Amino acid sequence: QSALTQPASVSGSPGQSITISCTGTSSDIGTYNHVSWYQHHPGKVPKLVIYDVSNRPSGVSNHFSGSKSGNTASLTISGLQAEDEADYYCSAYTSTRTDVFGTGTKVTVL
Amino acid sequence: QVQLVESGGGVVQPGRSLRLSCAASGFSFSNYAIHWVRQAPGKGLEWVAVISYDGTNKFYADSVKGRFTISRDNSKNTVYLQMDSLRAEDTAVYSCARDFTSYAFDVWGQGTMVTVSS
View (cartoon, rainbow over the protein chains, first blue to last red):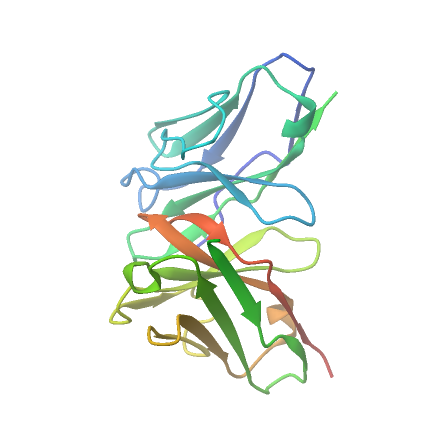
């Protein structure tokens, strides 16, 4: 159950698009479409922004989008805004019916 | 409103036990699986355990398997995490989360801090 691999940090200017990658294995991302993404502002509870690879929960802005190719999932934030500055975590269902989170990515809006 | 509230955290010596509770309100508790997730100081999120809606299925992270036990009482709308043989590396904020669908967590509690130290 090694953590999924994410870049430690990603930055962009307001209005730009950024993409965060999340790399797993054939035992999780590569086999199942149960990949989720969470936005986590320090001191607050994590917020689900994407589930099942590319679905947005009700109320989540459509400037969040998700995709997957092979063992790697990605979260794209389009039209970057100041309030998007936060930590982002991916998570994936695994073949042992457990879950695994990514290492986390700090998004900075320049 | 839909809410999860954790309790039971504190300071405990290595090797001792602690039981956390997660009380739910505002939704049909018995219809949802519930997970525990932890975050050590300065570290990322780590998934800990899950219990199915009816309590029949339970799964654990390798790091806690054999030491932690998850259970639930649907009559009390509460999930528990019994933590035995605690280690320093178990020090973290422990949060419970509702399984929205297929291991996606849409409702989170604020968490309860567990510190394992002599």
